[in-house]
Image 1 (tube, rainbow, N blue to C red):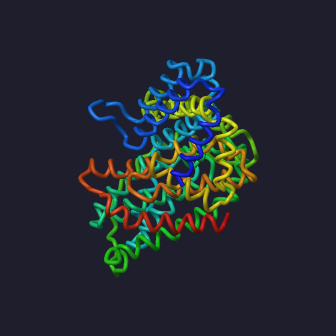
Image 2 (image 1 turned 60 degrees about the vertical axis):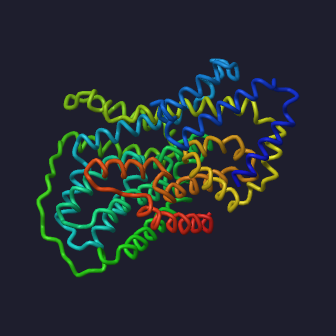
Image 3 (image 1 turned 60 degrees about the horizontal axis):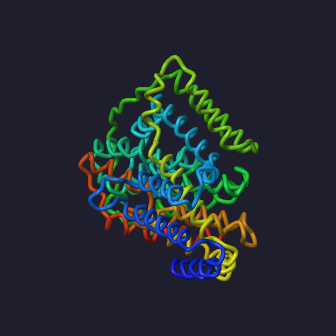
Length: 424
């Protein structure tokens, strides 16, 4: 499918060359391909530049080479996406600083007594939290807490780490605020928050159930056992007033989301209100924000904007239309392949030029959201959330390797995308 898309782009490019200067088109292609190569690999040999830096460099080169003017580059950036992501990061930062996630760990340690129950608790708490609070952040917060808990319980940490990574990806498919690619899709498509959730919450719920079964049967000696946990003491330090304020703000935001208020406006207003406090220095909140992710988004918007201007002609759009992307299975397969080649956010941005021209754009966007998110579970490098879990675990002496992940992630991806297609 990726090859077919490449052929279609090339066909359209040749047809549209008569009105676009050859050098500008070549520059746009070169910058796009180089940027996406770094997105796929994660770095450039010798140099220390990362994905965020590569996206920013690619966007800058689109302006420097004349593919886009500076004004066109500004217009290419979808600030609704950036504002929504920033607002949600501020909310999550306040929840983390208030001790909200440690309270969840304390509750789990106090009441869960069997490995299979612990697995279910980790899966559904990670999934539900990711549905509203951005999956990458949930992985960042939950991984050390889960690892601390299972280490003290003297259990095999690997299946529980798999649970955090895969469940965070699957749970995040449910809502617009679940992950970065859904945030982009929500902004580009205009699908109401409630309609998006109504379509994809069942996919998330069934996906979490499939995750529980797959992990349990993959690690039968860990979960099919009569073992019971001894009660352990886990610190539940929390800041009461800040926790209460953060939860109230989050609840109000979710209600406003479902009542159709502009998602970006609600998120940034909620985040800004949480900064109005006598208890937490704003610097502590700013440290928690993933600034490189915001930089990467801005750069990728500009790179894709340059490609659209220089390459995506009427002939290209017609060539893409002949690839039968109106077929949900073909669209989901293409999205899944691209997501594993270059990661899900760049894949969604690449498809944004074509989805609005399909016969049923709303259903197509939902298919893209479903496939791009669930495809992230295919391999350890399939999503940023997976890498966060692996890196945070490695820092604490636990190795989650590619093979261990793949034996659960690959069948989980196939099963969940298949159900998603049947449902949609």
